[in-house]
Image 1 (cartoon, rainbow over the protein chains, first blue to last red):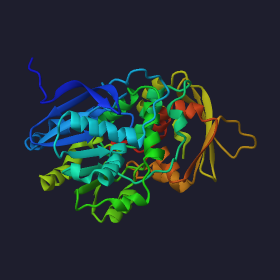
Image 2 (image 1 turned 90 degrees about the vertical axis):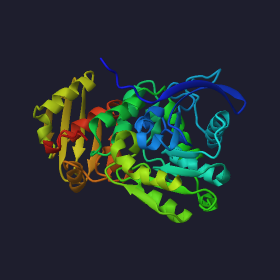
Image 3 (image 1 turned 45 degrees about the vertical axis):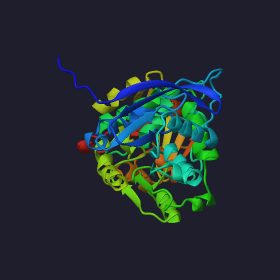
Image 4 (image 1 turned 30 degrees about the vertical axis):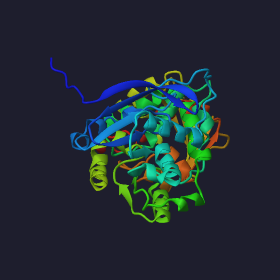
Length: 279
Length: 124
C-alpha cells in the first residue's frame, strides 16, 4: 500500500527561555520567507496542518510551527508542578523571541491565532522592526471574562471533556465536521489546567488598552483576519482594533475561532492574498 | 419547543454514551414557558411542559423564546449558534448547580442542537 507522505518535518530542540532550558517541539515545511505560526490557548501546532501541506504557500514560505511549553509535544520546564501554569505576556514574548533567535530566523512573518492574535499586537508595539509582517487571526485588544474559567480545571470535571466542549462551540456550524472534530480533539488532549493557564494571558495579563495606539503599521505591516462565528474575539472587536491602528480588517465568512484548523479550505482563500502582498 | 427532546432519534441515541453516568433534571425556560427535562444514564426520559407550582431541578437555562428560536435554526447565525455564545451576548442565563452541565458540556450542546432541522446534517 502506498502512503501519502506529507512534506512536514518534526524536530525537537532545547531552547533557553528566560534563563530556563526548555525542550521544544516544532514542525516545518517549505522554503523561503520564514512564517512562524502560533497556536491557540490550550491546543498545539497541529492546528496548522493544512498550512504545512499547502504547496502554494510552501513554494515561497518556510512555515514553522512550534508547540508552546506544556503544549503538544513540548515538555514542561524542569521542576514544574501540575496546577501552577499561568501564561504571562512577558513569558509568551520570551518564548517567541527565544524560538526565533534559536532558529536564527531573520525578519520572519509571525502569524498567531487567538492568544497568538493578541501577542502579535504586543510584538508590534515592542519589536516592530524585527518582523517582515505580523498576521493576527481572531485578534482583539482585550477580552472581559464572560464565563467562569475555573470550570476548565477542577478535579471533579474531566478537563479534556470540558475544554473540548468549550472549543466546539467557538467553531462555525458551517465548518466541516471532521475538521471541527480534530480541532476539538486537540483541546481534549491538553494537560490539566493548561487551557485555563493560557487564558490568564488572554483575559487578564495580556489585555491591551490605549497602548494599541503605539502600533505603527508603517514600521511593520499588520494584517487582521477574523471569522464571523467567533464570539470570543468578535469581528466587531477586531474592527475596532483595526480602526485604531488605521488598517482594514478581513472578515472571514463561514468560520469561527480556529480558521486554520476548523475550515482550512475556506481560510486559505483569505490567507493566500495576504501572503502574496507580504511576498 | 423542547417537547420533542423525548422523541428517540439516531442523533440523540448516539449521544447517550457521552453521558452514561449522568442522571439529572434541568429546566429550560423561554420566560413564558418552562420545560422540565429528566435525564437518566444519558437518555432523556421525560420532558414536562409547565406551568409548574414547585418545580425541582438542578440547573436552569433561561433565554427568550425568540433567542431559542434563533438557536434552533438549521444553520444559526453567529452569536446564536452555541449556548456559550448566547451567554456571551447576555441573552442566556445559567443558574443553579452547574456541575452536571459543565461536566457534560458537549453532550448538552449536542442534545439541544439535535432539535435543529436535520436537512443540514450538521450537529451544531
